[in-house]
Each structure stands twice: as structure tokens, then as C-alpha cells.
Length: 258
Image (cartoon, rainbow, N blue to C red; front, side, top):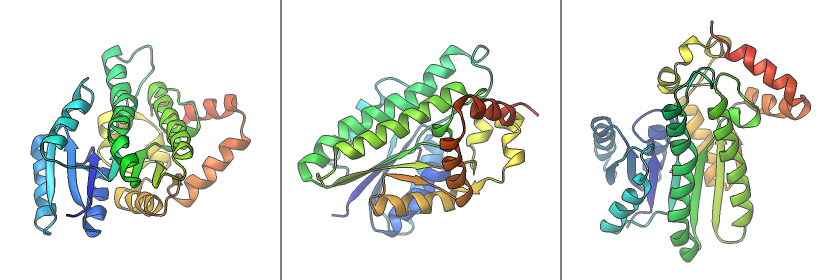
């Protein structure tokens, strides 16, 4: 049987591009997201290429969603060998003005679900002494982000957690890769309300296919941190040389509404 990969947020953008790359390498792909119609359509695209797929419809912002995913995997006797925690979203606006419900949902998806799925799937990887985990962070992980305070903080968690876990798992046959894209052309910015921000008018977004390819290549080579794009690599290096107070004020200007 083909190796099995689980991709969250698989119905669009970087998530689906990663599914296509996994398909090229012959993986059986478990796609999960909250939009059933879009997820089924994406799965059918892969099936037309003779790729085996299985769809799990779950909203990761709802507590208990990860446990339901695990129940469905167990019912189908699917043991995950590649876990891609791609699902995530952002809220744009001042923290004091954003709804508490929206911020808690963000934390549930970006941090809690990512951590929980990793925790629940990791034991079988350890037992088999084989596995790959990819976590999607962001260039936001390297700085604080006024107007998107909770999102930036959540991605800092993903970066730190992934680095620590990668170190813990050295010598086990399991690798952890954290991918840090910059601005990327997906539906992400529309849902986050980033059309009001100066960011996407100042920076030309990378396309999701390019981001996925760089991240996938890094995962397959066992790299711990993958920063996509030469400019983003330069910016990540620059954050090490820039005082935090200055970089935070700079991000505030960039993130400000047009």
C-alpha cells in the first residue's frame, strides 16, 4: 500500500498544491478541511490522476475536531506517515476591536489543532521509526505584528514548537520541517481582510505553487526551517539585526490600512 499523508487545509492554496506534490510521489492522501464541496472537488481532481484519496470534513476551530479526525483514520485503518499541518487563518485589525470569538478560533486552528494532531499522530511514527511532519508558519513568526497581533504570535509559536520538536526527535527517523512563507497569493488574505492593509500593495506575493514546492523539497530533505524566496530569507536575517521595538513599529506602518 502507498504511504499515507494527511494534509489539513487541503481544499485550496498551499494545502492543495502540497497535495499535488504528494500525489506525484505516489502518496495516498487524506484531505481535511471544513468546506465539504470544495474538498470533494479537490479529491476528485486527484482521483482523475489515479491517486487514492480519502476526505475528512472537519472544522479545526471547533474543539474535538482532531479527535474526530483520528477516529475516522482509525476506522479506515489509515496510519499517517506524513503529517502536513497547513490549516490556518488570520484576523486583521486592532486586538481591542477584533471579536474575542474570532481570536480564540484563530488560536484553536493555528496552535491548538496543530499541536494536538501532532501529539496524536506522533506515537505511530515513533513506533515505526519513520515519519515527516510539516508545520506551516510564516514570516510573521520572526516579528511582532500590530494589526494582526494574535496571528503573528501564533506563528511564532509554530516556529518555536517545530524547532524544539525537530531537536527532540533527532535520531528517531522522524523529521520536522517548519515552512515560513511571506505574502502568498491565496484566498487567505481575502478572508483575513488584508485587502485594507498596505502589505499586499507593497510586496508582490509569491504564488502558492512555488511556496509549496520549496516547502515540500525542504521536508523531503529533512530541513528544519524553510524560508521561501530569496527576499524573505534576507528579511528573516535582517530581523536578527534590527531591535524588536523598531521592527514592530515598521510592521505597524506596513500593516496600516490604506
